[in-house]
Length: 326
Image 1 (cartoon, rainbow, N blue to C red):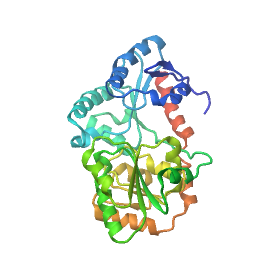
Image 2 (image 1 turned 45 degrees about the vertical axis):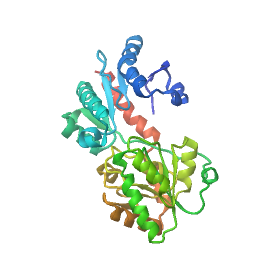
Image 3 (image 1 turned 30 degrees about the horizontal axis):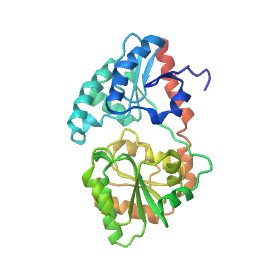
Image 4 (image 1 turned 90 degrees about the horizontal axis):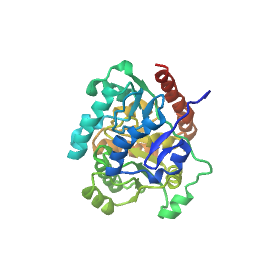
């Protein structure tokens, strides 16, 4: 990318370069400290740096003034399905998302679906939205041995990756897996992801389920190893803004069975091993078919190679240039 713009990052530790920020991701705050950073410290950093524009790359609360504001919206699930969120999250998101969306000079959406949601649910003009797809790339020298040895996984396994929350539809996946194991399919289901806000019932089911291993959240290295050895990724989500795990899996040539989320069909419909409905019967059928079908891993990798980091960065930088020239 020619003449990339200079980027500085507002963090809890101060103003950092992107490289410094990526090296200290584990230090990023959560909860009240995150809200404080988003709504108060960011404004102070803007006054210190006097940037040409401010980009909130994942919705971050503060509607700064005096400089052009660009906001990335990954989805508006809080507006589409508020019952999936706790009361406190619903109130915060409802108050902050709309205000920031209307204050922003421009918005980036992860998909055409999300762009449409911003228009229909948030009242944003379509001319103020640019769609930039997310990206993923395979790690180097990645093998499944590390993951298998650490987790004691033998034989074929299917993989689910994602925060455990209602829209991921994990309960339906466990119902479908019960059906598959009763029908004699001997494949382990590996569930990887942190526990979100669908806690006790799902946690209990994960512990009791037959042929299911719940790993919790994996490190970047272990997740890559898990992807590389999976026979199939199962991503039965009901609502997504993009849905990154199927793309991450595709980087390793791993096919995916996806759920009914419109963004998943938009991005992966041409390459998915199966597209399931919201019910367990449909999901079980697509998983069984996906496990039994031969898939061209080369074709899946070729699909993933079109979603490069450079392509995504170029799309975002183009928006930067348009806004900074105003």
